Image 1 (tube, helix red, strand yellow):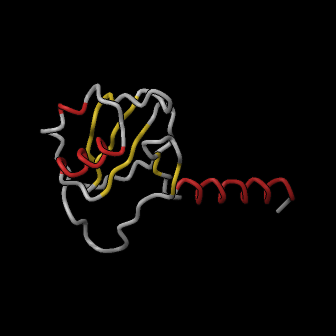
Image 2: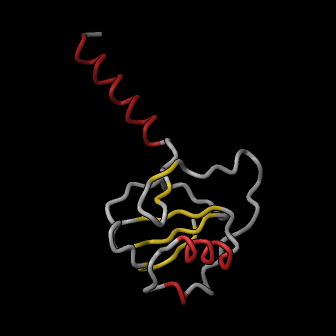
Length: 113
């Protein structure tokens, strides 16, 4: 195998591993922290966003995010800004909070997964 093929293979492997890396959580103050982990155990709760209509248009503060997580029944939550790369794995116990930007942080919608 020549050197360029070996380098391409190494790059592809690195990219594949990076795609599996847990995405960081964006906190209400704009700082980024490590992703929440529930470990290998079964999910503690299932997400349900039917009662989260009140959140749309609100600013994603710590208090708002805590209430969204509680009201949805989810055990894990994440904030997703435009152009944020996230994993596509479905988790029944996770609530996603979609915001308009990392600066304004206005909630656009909530989804499970």
